[in-house]
Length: 104
Image (tube, rainbow, N blue to C red):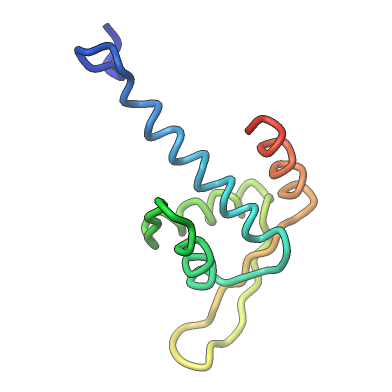
């Protein structure tokens, strides 16, 4: 039996994959209306019931989406602390979001 199934016949690996896909979908949807920096996204997404999202989950997703050109990144000085990185959807990101919503 594959490693991604437990002895009761239920899957385990799909849970992780579902969470990863859901986080990507939610991040793209949160950026649909306006750009935001990482902490703003965490705040927006923390209002969703049942979703626990941490920086260690969010920032790798943002980095991957930027690498795949689904989000564009710009840096601005912060009133306090390090510069802020603002993320916004690109045309590719909007198409990806629409495709994900269609399949959802």
